[in-house]
Each structure stands twice: as structure tokens, then as C-alpha cells.
Length: 431
Image (cartoon, one colour):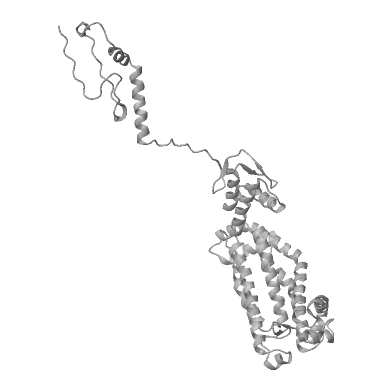
């Protein structure tokens, strides 16, 4: 083991030096021989490594986005060679080579931090065996061997025997309980990270070998961590648990603010963006403008979530511009499911339905108006006035016109001057 450590001293020496520097800071607060000082030193080492890997993570995101742009081409290859799996795989690899993408780009952060993991493992193994490594001298080695995290020594393993654990100043029960809990948390965080990627941030409209690979890793990695975790010292478990939690939080941030097109995360993001833009009537950040700009540039190639976003802006009188800004506009064109713009015509408003009483009163008023405008109404009014001429003197040829029937079957009102009830017929005229 010393030979292997000496061969990789160019890695173990910097890692041990960083741990010692952090320990000197936390030792002044919590005490140099406490598990908090050494445990926080390992956590700080993880954070420092992950910060240095952020450019690599950004490169991974870009490579993933490049893979997503190939989704339509992948779908065509799948449909063309759906009965020939070997030819389908060959065409997929040819497409990856021509576009310069790599489906294994998601493994880059893990591969990049593996040397640091190897160095930390040897540093902690040297503490467990009582041998100095890197810049850790005898005094620091004695301090690290006294450090306990929740009752488990920093260099203890799940598979250690009772004699070795007692030599480190702990009990076998404490060591196995702490290591088992940390292994379960480490595996669960890894599984949740992969599951979140598969269920929320993957375009479900296209099935590619890349998706199958991610689905396989979702189950393989947690099992690997559980199997190998029983041989990891407590300090290494702290390292992997911290880096898994960092990865999970980092991925949650990316999924929320820069989701994959066509995924469930994009649908949720565009729904939030629609409410935000319609409330403020503009895009307020560079990230929002970049998302809107990408959606506008797609044109008819937009997915259903992006078309819904554009239509929602159109309905409230907003128009997305090519530079990612949103302005007020008069456009009423909305897009259908196939991306074809259509003009939204306003619906014809139906008249309100009147009640029976309103219809009867309207019909009665119409009857009165028609009766007043006819000549018979004037004659009926003048016939009530007293006249000096006897009834016999009136010409017999003046025949009385029948009264108009009430409209709509309603009961007509009595004309002015007429008595209510049945009228007695007039006496026949004398000749």
C-alpha cells in the first residue's frame, strides 16, 4: 500500500495539505482532536473540489444540450431502422461522431473527482493503519485517530473487527450503526439524483440509448455505493455523502432554471415564466430572455409546452421578440398543435334569454302601440263623445272593423272607453 501511495503522491500530498489547512481553521473553533474539526475539513475539501469542477459541469450541460438537439435525428433513425437494432446502433454512433457529442458526458464529473477520492481514501487508510502520508505528521495522525463522528472513529470501517475498533477508542455497535446509516443516505441520495434526472429533465417523446443508459445507472450506482461502502472508512463516507448532496442540489437548481426541452421540468418552468411575464409584462433577467429567445427561434419546431407559452402571451396581448424580450402587441394569432398560426376570432355573443313576464309585457306594449297607430283607434275614441245625431242617423254602411288579435297569445288589454267584461250587442238600426 505504501508503494501505491508513493506512486500517487502527486495527488495524495495536495489533498492531505488541503485537509490540514482546513483542520487548522476548524480546530481553533471546535478543538483540534474533535470529529467536527476533521469532519468539516473533509466537507470543505469536497466543496472546494466541486467548485473547481464547475467549468467541467458547465461543459457537461452544454454536451447534454447538444445531445438534446439531436433528438429529432435520433427519432428518424429509430423509425427507419426499427427492425434492425444493430444498424440502428451503428447509425447512432455515426451521428454522435459527426455532431461531436458524447453520450457518456454525464459521467465526466464523477471521472474527474475520482483521483481526489483515491487520494482521500489513502490518506484516511493511513490514519487507520497509523502511518503518516503526505503532509500529515505524527501529531496530526494522533489527533485524527482520536476524532469521532457520532461515536465512530474517522478511520473505522463497517467490516472492521471489534479489536480494531476498540483500538481506535470506539465500540463495534456505534461504528456499524453510523456507517450503515451513512451508506443508506449515500445510496438514497444517489438514487434520488438519477431518478430526478430521468423523471423530470428528460424529453419523453424520444427514446434513445442515452435514456436507457441513464435508467440503468439510476439502479446500478446506488447498488455499487452500497456494496463498496462497507469497505470505506467513515471519512470517505462523509466525502461521498457530501458530494452526493452537492450534486443533488446542483442538479435541482439546473432543472428548475434551465430544464430540458420537452420535459416535465420545462412545462413547470414555462408555467411559472408565463405568470411572471404576464404580471410584469416583460422579461426581467438574462436567463428568462435566453429561454424566450430560444423558443422564438425554433419557429414551427416548438414542442407543445413552448406553443402553449407563446399562445398564453398572445391571449393577454403580449408578443415575444427574437431578442428574448416581450412587448405589447395587437397580434391575435395563436398556434395549433402542429405549429400552424391561426387567427383567433371573437365569439358571437348570444342575446340574453328573457323571462316569461318580460316577453308578455313586451308583447302587450307592442299591441297597445299598434292599436294607437291605426285609424280604428281614433274612431273608437271619437265614438265615445256625445253626438247630437241619433244613432239611426248614422250611415249603415260604416261597418266596424274587428279588433286585432293579441300577439303571442297574450291577453289583450281593454281599449280605452270600453267596459270590461262581455259587451251587449247594439240594437239593429231602424230603416
